[in-house]
Length: 487
Ligand code: C2O
Ligand code: CU
Ligand code: CU
Image (cartoon, rainbow, N blue to C red; front, side, top):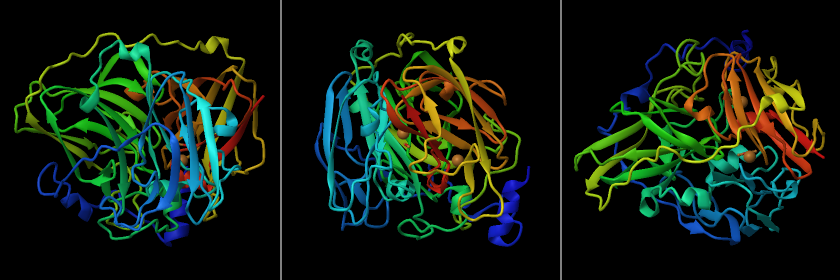
């Protein structure tokens, strides 16, 4: 049970005791006080056409360096489509290295999925074209090149892929300026390490940042009216897990998770959001006085399990200026500035959700998540395997219903497990009850240390090779990924 501590000794040459120490960055954690805040920026929208991958010569405040971009900006432009539409885009790679695009959560044919065996070479281009099968929801897109996903996402290449449909439209949910995508990431700005300055400890810990950015803006604030808002939350951080809470203690009203709307809103005091996961919340500012502010932050948690208590504290970044995993960090401040023309109310019923019946599963698969000792790369395995581009690891029948068991043998880290091109529903957690972000259709699920999480999945209807991996991008690039062959 001490694999992680063993590793820490290997790398840093001695024990470390980050957990008990009050670190300098905590002093700057002001909860709406002294940190200089910048206004939120809403990404532009994009309906298809040419999408150029390039490095900008300009410096971005949210990155402190020359950002890597899709569509010439970071975050990449928000793609908004309707269910059943055809979506097409041509990726033009003006980077000096291979890239590609993966459509995270989107039910695409295998050859459109952005598997790293199909990179687009520097100077090359390729067409992506598919019909949108997903129900309304918040999905996203990012590069997935072999062993460089973490770097390219961190440097700025990621954007929203939003699907609308008629079932959702009939609800009259907040729209236009009241429907706000929030891409939450963290970067090393305070510690002044530009670029993706990778160190050995960033493999086990993941590349944790010291500054939260929302839509690329560090320490963001957003001016709101006294109405009802729909916020689409996406954790696009490489490794940082959030447990979101409002500073005034008001509950979060969750209306959607990875795969779209829930049956009915679920309220929770705190909302887990691991790398790759999405959740949509409704926030009603109608009773907030003009001039007041509401802070969304991520509360402190240990490595014990979804209740957040117990277990040891999280592990730090590579320097003491980087808050460890599980530290309390500010996300964004909402400043109530003006009266809204109309209110809007929270629907009591949202959508009809198809419930997968685990009793009809044709197969149960177990995925053991482990951390190897005595190595400095290739630490993270699934069923004892490190990723191999060409090796086929699991064979699945198209459209089958299966039970998957994610079994963590790692006592030191939380792993957000993600599958490409299909979705699942969470059945159980060995550590206790399901949490608000375990509801509905999912493609990414947090697996806490030594925990077993069971899900029921529907295999893709398209044949070909898909991926299953940890969405802590440094774990993925380190090999915590396997190929799923659908036939
Ligand atoms: Cu967003 Cu293979 O992942
Ligand atoms: Cu994905
Ligand atoms: Cu992991």
